[in-house]
Amino acid sequence: MKGLCLFLGSVLVAASCTSSTAPVAGQGPTSQVRVTDATRVADCQFVNSITESYHSGLLFAGTGLKQAQNEVLVEAGRQGATDVVWNSLNSGGVVQSATASAYRCPS
Image (cartoon, rainbow, N blue to C red; front, side, top):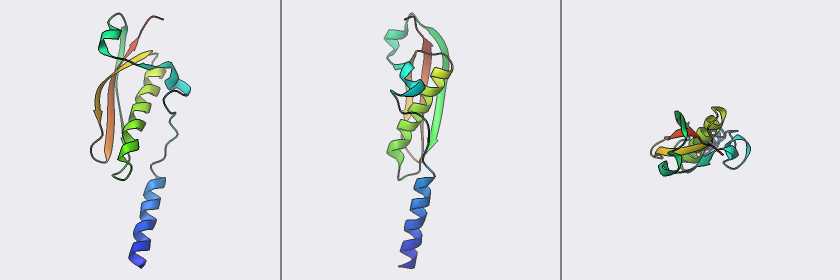
């Protein structure tokens, strides 16, 4: 029983370490950046390729990819991009990552 309590306690501690304050897509800086496809950025200026990773652990892998995507959107907004095209989304393992090409498109 003591072992079970220690295990559950360590799971709770691990869960509390995975929280983040990055904005959710559609709110804050990410709302200025659109996710689109390569055909829609043909007349846009390339800004940068952006990769972000998020270590969520095995228990929270589903939220880790979304967090990595949000961090890409935030960084794209900081760099002045208006649109991103996802190049790679990796949701396997304990580290999730997202890579996108960021573009500045005319309004």
